[in-house]
Image (cartoon, rainbow, N blue to C red; front, side, top):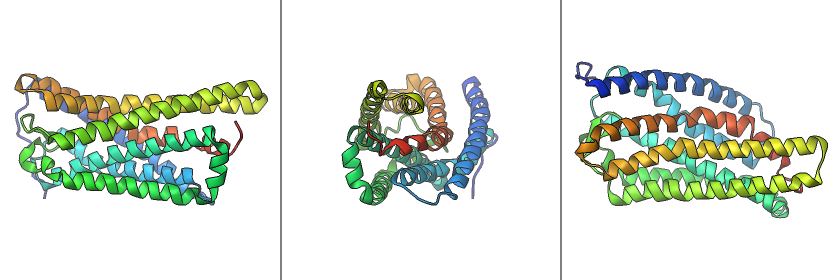
Length: 294
C-alpha cells in the first residue's frame, strides 16, 4: 500500500521543483510512451531478426522499465510518497533502466565501429552475430541486477528523505559510488566517444570514393551517429555529476545538490524517448550498410 504525505510543507525551492517535475515528467511520459509503443509495433512486424534488432529490443525493454513506473514519479510530484520498500524498488528500477541503457548503447557503438572498421570480420562472424548479441544483452542485464542486489542497502527506506530522494547525510558506499561513476559512466562514455568518432571518421573519409545516393546515405549515417553520441553525453553526464556532488557535499549545499540532481535525473529520463528515435527509426539505416565495404 502506498503511504502519501500530501500535507508535507514545502519551501520555495521544493515548490518550484515539484512544479517542474509535474510538467517535465508528464511530458516525458506522454512522448516516450508514444514513441516506444510505435517502436514496439514496428518490432512486431519484423520478419528477419538481426543482431541490431536484438540490441534494440533490449534497449526498448529497458526504456519500458522506466516508462511503466513514471506515473508514480508524476504522482510523487503532486503528493509526496513516504519512503517505503516500494520506493526502494522504484529506485532500483530507475538505476536498472539507466545503466542497462548505457551498457546497451555502448555495445551498439562497439558493434557499429567493428562493422565499419572490420567489415570482413563482421561478415565472418555473421552466422553467430545474433548469438553474440543475445549473450551480450543477457550479461548486461545480469551485471546490472547483481550490482543492484549487492548494494540494495543503500536504497533502503530509512536512507531516503522522500520516495525518490536519498538523505544527503546518507552517503553511498564507496564501492557502489565508484561502480556507478567509473563502470557505469566513465568507461562507457569513453568507449562511445571513441567508437563514434572513429566510425564517423571512416564514413567521412569514404565519401571520396562514392557518389550519388550512396554518398548521401553515408552522410546521413554520420549525422545520426553524431547525434546519438551527443545525446548520450547530454543525457547521462549531468546525473553522474549530481551523484558526485551528492557524495562530496555537506548540509550547506543541500538545496543546490537536491535541485541539480532532480533536474539531472529528468534529463536522463528523456533518453527513454530519444532512444526510439535515434536508434530504431534512424539506426536501422546503419544496419543496411553494415555489410558494405567502406
